[in-house]
Image 1 (cartoon, one colour):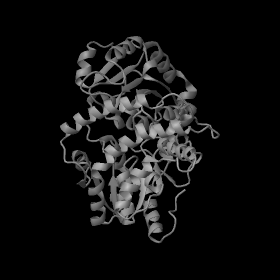
Image 2: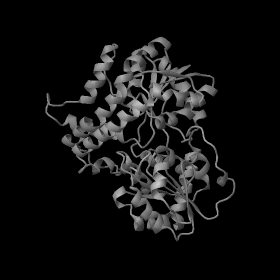
Image 3: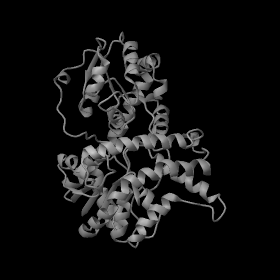
Length: 438
């Protein structure tokens, strides 16, 4: 069968799809990846055939625009109702739902603007590509709604592939619940209107499948899927982080319990975005007397600003996470897919310090599973991080829970297993039957 892979236009989201794309190729299927032009080097670097859809801009232009949009998103976040979102992250089965004003403003200020910026520029090219190549299956990364529209335009089966906990489906459910309680004629739905406008151009009627997919591929253990949904295919997280060279210091065993501290894409060529350099220095001083080997990944400029570090700290520019995490006793990170998923896979206790929109739900799932702890960047001072690290390194129950999650992760269907299941789902779709998913 022909499989079209459509990532959300960020390299990290593309990398999340690479193992499954390769599993489908090695199972004998034709696979192509359609992405913004500045993603194509990463696509071809992964050995996959790429097709450009969307604006032909250089990485430099994209970077300037993204930095501007980051500021815009921060301003939107301040306008959005940050207080009172607790029900969205409540893990209890009988949780309350968000109210109409809260949930509609989150969609209007955060979800829809990001969706339009990322999908509108590639929509027409992607539909034209789908009509020309006629894929049987479209796998679209979460928030890459253009993939759903293109699949519907040609009658292909399609699935949303998650990269994290499914906070956006939970948010959509709260929206629809609150909308149904509004008076008739006063039930605006900007996300529906946007997707219906695009779908209507290609003779497709709107359905919630354009938002959630015909089914969902979920990469984390059951503990991180708090809302059981029937149309879900689980798959174990298998890391791909791009080309990497294994550093020489990984050749032998660590001289002391190894702790990785990394903040992934929350760093740039200036100071840390998540934590200022002064705060990082405070944390390093607070843990300087602990018997451990702290591996701190920082970009060059931040390394220069940090200056001297304690004797138990090794500062590196980058690390190949699949190689270093199996050697670690703990990891401190911002909650990104690579570090979070890798720590789960290898049973490593985690301290999450982050502020992403999905962070509270991810944090809650981790703490409920007893495999780590979390704090906001504002809470992450020297004493707090020291206390959390000591717990990660010494709490036997916490460490056992982390190992258990690692075993559960590795016991999930592999991408190779899922490739065979997807073939059956597409066959059922062709026959007009409901996809055989659980």
